[in-house]
Image (cartoon, rainbow, N blue to C red):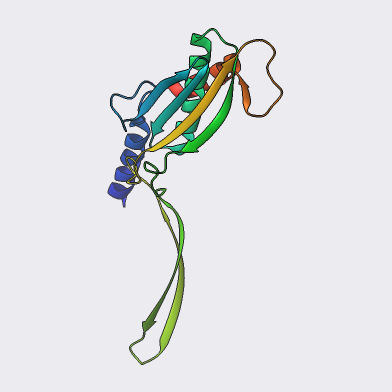
Length: 163
């Protein structure tokens, strides 16, 4: 039992330590961001990660960076989606199963069980790519939920992205 707990703890530490750092993707499909300027003040930003929440937050952070690099103040997300070709089935999760069996004396029984999965050292689901198309701007920020203050996004998401 002690060996099992030690192995589980080691696996959890390895899973936490294997988070890729924030930065550009080294090649298509690799973990990291990719930025394409479509036209003046319009960009397509994608971020690939194994964790969908990290992919989303890091794509927002990259949108803020691009906005600030262009000396703009805010950005509006005009389109957002998860790249279906890269999206995998989530790892782990809860499942319910029903099974049946015949006992040794001819009696039947039905069992119901609840199981769960714990991904150790990553998941087999593969990477997920969050894609944002944005328009950047300066001056008074439009009052729409799809418009973000670039400096605020940068301040609020940077520490989580680089840790």
